[in-house]
Length: 389
Image (cartoon, rainbow, N blue to C red; front, side, top):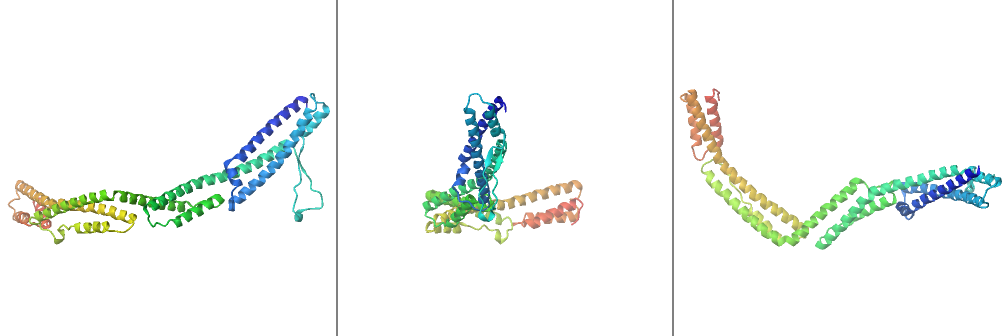
């Protein structure tokens, strides 16, 4: 090497050494690296990390030998301000030749030979390439394990948070809700994810099942707490809802009484009251010694039943009055058909006249049979339009 070439090469190698040193420090301070150093691993993750650690051990051996060569080169350069031929020759051998010596590794006795093991000699460039390959293997392992942890631990942490919340709600209510099985499942899943994230990640469907169960428990417990705090007010609201049911059922009975004298109704068409059932359930709820989870479910069901009963009674009344409207609509159709028969000159036709009288008799007879009346109107309409029975 020329003096300028040796100076340049020495500066470049010093920069390279500093860069490699910084990368190794970053690797050792990496969060996942620190976690793995103190973790108890097993399975696929243990094997992957063991391979990475072996690569790192090789990297450090290479790095120590590499730095030793550069220290020797810097010592030679510092001996004289202007390098002579002998110094340039030594620097050339160190910076460009196979100056990095890797001592032969000690082998178990069963793998040894009586012949001496040869040390391996590398140039600085070869040493850097081999260090880079080892570094890549280690960082690839870190990335794989970190990705696996990032995929599994947040969901497990969220489920653990939900479990603590549900446990706190259960304790506030004093409910006998057994969560030991769920806690045990979560604990096992978390331990597996920590110890072997590559080989034993949590099954997504299992975690979803636990998450869904905890969400349902939380919703039920929160509702039970609300019911306990609001029971007095909601009971008053329920009493008011019962009054609405009574009023709606009274209207349905009045509608039935009005309609039954005008329209022929089957016996089952009479409105049935649900008040005895509803008040009985409320009385039982007042004296219940069940936990608030069960009482909350019963109160909510009773509120819904009261709303449905009132709606059903109103629907019944509307349907009953609709029968009168249907009779009146059929009367109107019959009148319109008669007018059409007059225009077509069919009003005096004996068959048409007979069908008209039959339909008219059915529609103006109380109580009216709507089914027969509708059939009679249809027959009369077809007859004046030229159709048969």
